[in-house]
Amino acid sequence: MDGVRQEGRSSRSVNDPEREPADASSGINPKQIVAASLKRERTRAGLSIGELARRAGIGKSTLSQLESGDGNPSVETLWALSTALGLQFSALLDAPVHPVEVIRFGDGPVIPAAAADYSATLLSTARPGTRRDMYLIRAEPGEPRVSAPHSRGVVEHVVISAGRARVGPTDAAVELGAGDYVSYAGDIEHVFAALVPGTVAVMISEST
Image 1: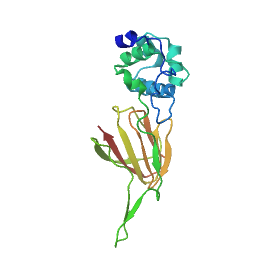
Image 2: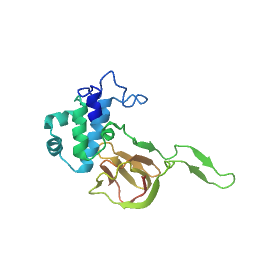
Image 3: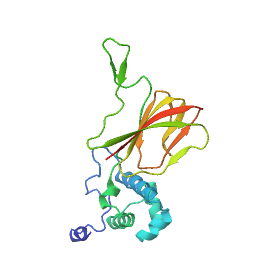
Image 4: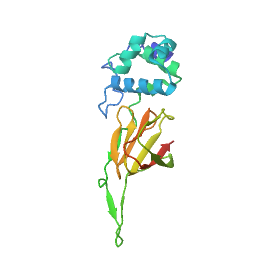
């Protein structure tokens, strides 16, 4: 923070035209990145908007505007918020790492066998340095399984084996049928809701 003051940038906001965009290659608005990061990290920490604002020493309305993407965050404000959340400053400027990806049954790159009636479809490749744990999921209609955010960087992969389910981030869940695949960030709140009896799925949790 002292370095920022020495360079005379203490009042410059994250979308100052003289600054390089946070993710120039993706075209994502820096304010949208900050909004998504703040909501993700606040939810993971289990804090309300009011409590995080109190800890950071900023107004509740200011934080609400930042999370909605309407605010114009200054360096000081982001430092205060990152400190209150126990994060590195850069964590609030990270672009979304893993978008929701869906591959419907029959789509995707199919590799057939030479003789047998057999084919394989590549659904996902592991990121370097990651580990993957595999689970068999059995679920019935009724109360959905809502999972709190996991550790930072976790990605979940789900293939529906039988039945139908609504799966993914709670605000962007996707309805899937047998053979459909979805991957999504597991470090935000997510849901698995069976839509028909006897729903079965394979879930892989990928972490670094």
